[in-house]
Amino acid sequence: MNEIVQQIFQGIVEGQQDIVAAGVDAALEAGVPARTILDEGMLAAMAEVGRQFEEGECYVPEMMVSARAMKTGLAKLKPSLKQTNVQTAGTVAVGTVKGDLHDMGKNLVGMMLEGAGFTVKDLGVDVSPEAFVAAADDVDVIGLSALLTTTMGQMKTTLDALDAAGKRPKVKVIIGGAPVTEDFARHIGADGYAADASRAVALAKSLISLSD
Ligand code: B1M
Figure: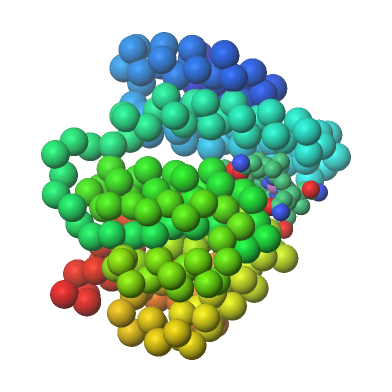
């Protein structure tokens, strides 16, 4: 691994936001591609934090400082993940489902969609089915994120609420997040599942072009 990328990785694991911010600046200046910084430095570090949490080597407060360091790095990286002068491809509302406070995957999906030319409405975290229903009239796609096995059920609840409000025919619903699978998406009747932010962009594009 590139030395600066290694520093970013370590900075996130140890929750040192200053090191992460300086590392991202230095890596970009040295010509390291934004995707390498994201994949090998930042996402790999959060996976390591998750492993440490699972194995009892760190606890929620440590996870929070790592998350803060990751956010600082993501904010620095955002302009480089976006392309410029891309035409608007459609409008997507993204949100983390009710009961779930994890927002980095959702933020990344939003950033990549913006980079690909979509207009993104970020509904935030702990978003109720009713709030997704309220957003449905103004968007082409709704993106639901869930990181907890206990909140995945909210995806089905949200789809049911959209259905009950008569919004399902007009809006495509895509889902993702660490515990979510293709099978689960099919089972609850979502229009698609994406394993990561890049695939979410490809999926949103294909669903919009299909409905044209
Ligand atoms: Co939490 N947490 N957490 N946590 N946390 C996990 C998810 C966990 C797997 C850790 C572990 O045990 N290994 C575990 C869930 C277990 C489970 O249910 N299976 C867990 C737990 C248990 C909890 C608490 C219950 C802990 C507690 O309080 N006892 C609690 C719940 C709070 C709540 O939400 N109600 C909790 C709290 C927290 C913090 C607040 C401390 C913090 C979140 C801070 C924040 O988001 N602002 C946190 C963190 C940081 C994590 C880990 C370590 C990292 C998550 C992350 O941000 N990853 C996580 C372990 C892990 O995932 N390895 C863990 C980076 C992010 C970019 O990846 O979100 O997966 P991710 O997004 C990916 C893909 O999933 C996908 O694209 C992204 C990559 O390109 N994707 C989509 C995501 N959304 C998508 C939507 C799409 C398409 C793709 O379409 C719309």
